[in-house]
Amino acid sequence: MQLRIELTVISQTAISVGAGGSIATIADKSIVRDGWGRPLIPGSQVKGKLRWAAEQLLRGLGKDIPAPFEGAQREEHDTPVRQLFGSPMSRSPLFFAHLPGIIGDLSQAESIRAQPTQHLSQIRPSVTINRHRRTAAESLLLFQETALETTRFHSSRAITGQINDLSQAALLWIAARLSSRWGGAKSRGLGWAKVETNVFVDGQACTEDELRTALRALIADVGGRP
Image (cartoon, rainbow, N blue to C red; front, side, top):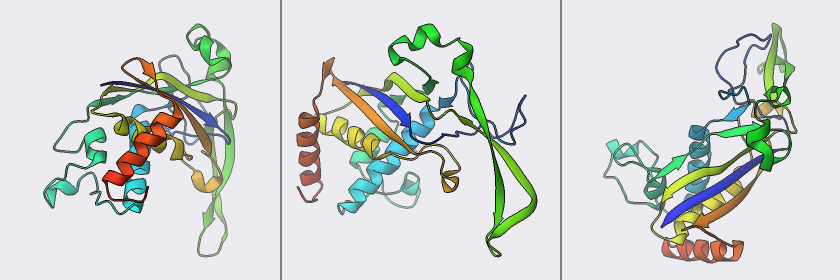
């Protein structure tokens, strides 16, 4: 079965996906950008966030879900998570694309991507807290770059690849819906967002009722409650 999932991460507070340094900005930590200069959520973070959410959901239902690199310590289990996301011993059948930040109409993303407004960001000052004294540390004022709060991170082909049945699409769907924090500086209130999804299997849109039914079947199969 051919899968395509469209994802839109709608920021509710500013999102900062750091690039690990600062270039041509006063920020101590700049954000990741694509080749057009737009803020970006990398596909690796999309994969990591959804994998973590799927793992927590299934562990909460009592399923034995090993950590990604636990295969070196014990025999690798064929779990729903590893079937979708892979492991050091097996490659994922899915591709996770980058989500570029878009300000404006999502349907016009391609035509407006080079406009200067798409490159806008903001610099937020913050201080380092001394956790022992619970006071601001001296001489440690920081400047962090974030995407604007009106930015939506979107890709119509965020997740593509092959799946075996609809329950796998349902697990990805609920994992995306459960992912409410993106980027860094979460302790400073950054990164809150909601995720909207559209799921297509073999070119046909899946309804939420179909996905819920498939998810219930998966939960029953792994021994959880219906």
